[in-house]
Image 1 (cartoon, rainbow, N blue to C red):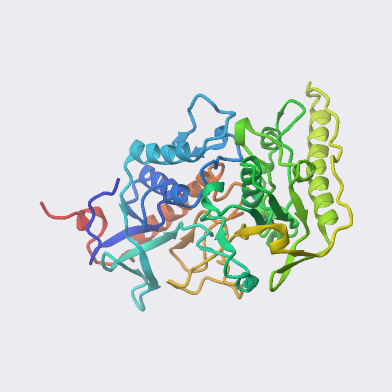
Image 2: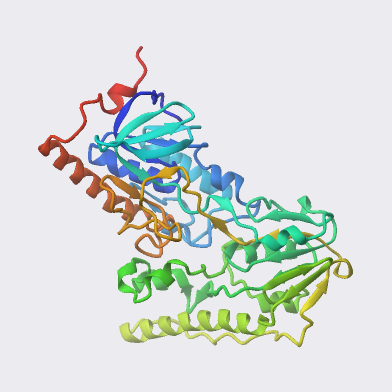
Length: 439
């Protein structure tokens, strides 16, 4: 899908780093505004979905929420949940629909602002080039994050990160410990459980949400209530909101709740947070009941808000009985012996960490988080797109990355026009005309 564009020595009005849904969205918006640009991706379109998702992976939000600019979902199952292969096909079809100036297989290794000229210099494995403005659209999930205590596990225990997990068959026979109960951890635990494996799950503080309530998908209710358009500036605790863990639920088999209590009733072994490893013994916090109760309370609170919305607008919706816990944890020892439990492998569903070491532009705070307002940084011409809660819940997702892209494209176009008026653009040859190979 790559476009034949020569990078070495070229100059572009705008360079977009990252060719996932964020990079493709901003490319579509820039093209609509007549802004010349190039999009670089270290791999191929759909790489993350193809190589960092397990075999049974599917979206947890309905297909109708896939709203990339100019390419909303038009398939036969708007209320369904695309599986991994369908997501890849959706992105490939998006590329085919407008043919962005995308160069695949090019990794940016350094990005800095040139002294004096104000242009950005980008070093890549295909040569260096410059740009007036740059959009970093690589998202936040760069390197798998595994806790240091993983190093203390016995050598014979097979360890994989959630990004490496594909299916139960890749793990050796025996019980499996899954650490982490965000969306990935809960879905992988379910996948292993349905495959007949004995699963031990270290339960953290992630919240959950019901799949359906009062006749509709909860996502549909929340969308109607304006939840997904609420901006980060409307929260008193914006920093805390940005760090929230996603609610766990699944779109598998048409969508359903993930109820860890039901799994426990069916044989899954639940524990509190994993806190230590001593030889062959695992140590867990005494917080399983608290974590399960918290997850349930969040789910019921969401139902409360839906009830209030229905009542306030006089909506005719069926009544539904509230959730009743089907299992309660009994007093459990805080330790577990790996050998006695028959555990032969561990799946670390402990998230990712950002890697922006290649960016030599002062746009990060003391924690390494990009300082920005809706993706616009304090460095003129430098932007981010696709960050979680960049502005709303759906930022970085198919639901709202397009809205963020429109905002940034307008800003980029206005900056370009102002530069044209002020005569501050560089004298270097610009655009695709300067980059396309001769002949």
